[in-house]
Image (cartoon, rainbow, N blue to C red; front, side, top):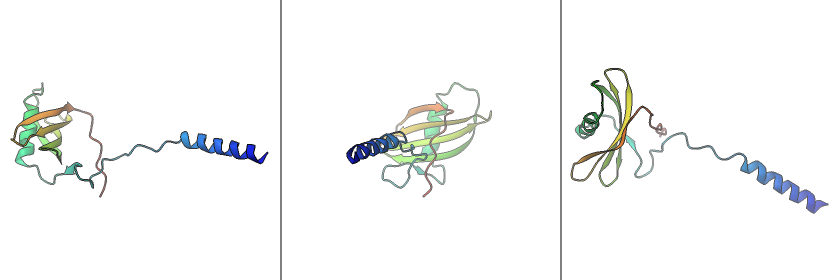
Length: 120
């Protein structure tokens, strides 16, 4: 009888644990090597990265402002850029700059925001 109760309790515990998976992380960590880092100022390289994107966008709107730049060092540099056009639209894109200084858009401009960075 005790053996049956123990088996039922164990099974109930396993079922309860499997129904409550851990929630997905809600922010992007910044305290690990290779993670994105928020840039305090917009570098000339980030401006050139965005110019690469703007040249490929099918819009007559012009750049109003760069809202945020994040960088990630990866055999060159990834620039995750959030920017606003003069029509009020906010866009997000990622551009890779290789070690020779060539720029390539790796994530086309999208209105889907980046995952927020975790507080330090």
